[in-house]
Image (tube, rainbow, N blue to C red):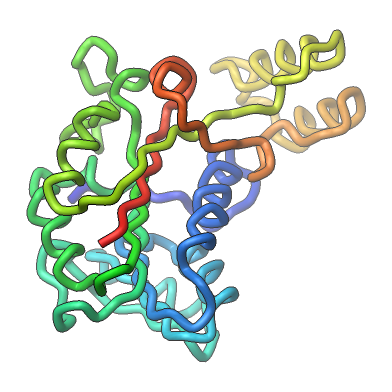
Length: 250
């Protein structure tokens, strides 16, 4: 599996959408449950899950260095970080009440084996929550531009993959909604956001670009979690949602 981690830093173009996904997952990881966050990376999402659970929350990653970083940064009594291979988990059958796996299955050619293993360790009635890039947007011509991805999925392909194990599942799309309300201010804000994130301009200090956005438009340049929404309509997903978000019930 190749590495493509969201660093533990809020001044990131991708931070808001990652936080949004974990907050959406909280709907299915109720307090008192035993939870697994597989491919946890730097562990910030595992900590979000642990904040809202009185049960044990496990963060697993195949990278030993990532797990060492997690153990150093997150100290809650109910949080546990371990080196794990998502295709070979050292847990008994039906161990977890909920499993989260964000931006993972596109990184390994053993994704079918991984989904089967997650199904094995999930309790009946438990939830698996998965996110992955939407190939209809990120690789519409079939050419995967992200060098860390071994494959990408359309919503139909993800439905087929997960539906091979789960009878109950819903596929959503994660959409950026900051500029949904049409106004002159939002039109200008969207224009300046695009300019400030363009290749040449983004070499300027983030603090400068962010200060301008705050001064004239009242929000940060980089999106926050409330700037995103989950969509159910397939036409919207295929047109406007670069990330797929699946909720599966065993």
